[in-house]
Structures are given as C-alpha cells and as structure tokens.
Length: 84
Image (cartoon, rainbow, N blue to C red; front, side, top):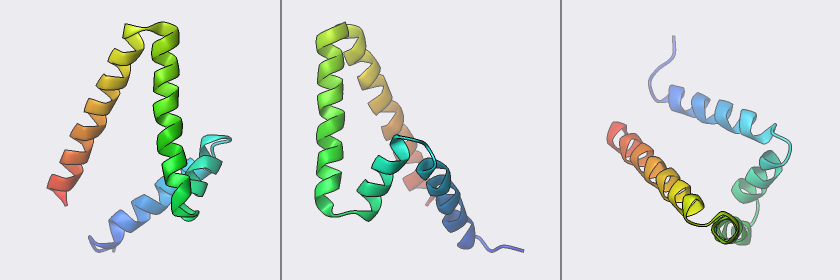
C-alpha cells in the first residue's frame, strides 16, 4: 500500500520517463532539467523565438493559440498549487 507522499514522486518519475523517451523533446527536456542553468534560459528564448516566428508567418491566429495555451497552463498551475 502506498502512502500519499510517495504517489507524487512516482507520478513525477513516470512523467519524466515518458518525456525523456520522446525523440527531440526528450533530449531538450533532459538538458533543461539536469543540465546547467543556462539551458533553461536557452529553452525560454527558444519558445519565445518560436512564438515570434509563428506570429510572423501565420499572424494573429498564432498569437491567439499561444495566449490560449499560456492561459491553460496557468490554470493547470493554479489547480496544482491549490491541490498541494
């Protein structure tokens, strides 16, 4: 029988295990999590550059999709903070 504090650690391990096995995203995620701090800033810069490129190519719809994605991630973050 598992206790409650062990369950989130196992879920975190499963999420990382699955994420790390993805071909391109897994390697980038591992570098951000386990590498030096500079890798996190490079990832943030890459996401911002990707969104900027998408807005330049596709215009306003790309900006709307990026904003809706950010709103969804913020709601998920608030729910996770509330649940503990």
